Amino acid sequence: MKNVKKIAVAIILFVAATGFVNAQSKTAHINVQQLLSEMPEMKAAQAELKKLQETYKADIESSMTELKNKYTQYSNEATSKSEEENQKRAVELQGFEKNIQEAEQAAVQEMQKKQQELFAPISDKAKQAIEKVAAAQGFEYVIDASPGLSLIVAKGQDLLPAVKQELGF
Image (cartoon, rainbow, N blue to C red; front, side, top):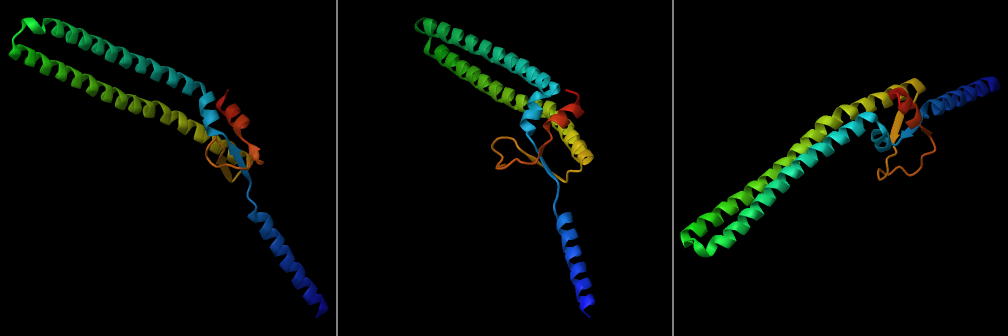
């Protein structure tokens, strides 16, 4: 009877220890923002966005200069024009100003759309590389260690070097 109790206690301890070991998951961390910022594709996408932004900015500045020139011209000619003509010109200037504001809003929307279009495949590529490295190294959880995302302790393995190697840079 004494031996049965010892065997039962041993089995219970073995099962508990095995369960405890299995309950511990392998966890790693990676600074996704740093990874993305160092990817060559991201640098190229950011350069493309900057070029597009400069194009929009130049167009809007050109329109603003044209508006200022018309405003100055109309102000100088106001005394020699009729009240009706001056009112038409004021309405014209207001319409021109409205068109510039609409162009600015459209530019912002186009920039956001282009950013999403460019960044989504890069983000997906990074995610796939992280998943591949995590699976190869046996990690069940990978935590994003980017600043501001509430990771307080990062004592686990950092996957950034391995993922960068996987991506070829």
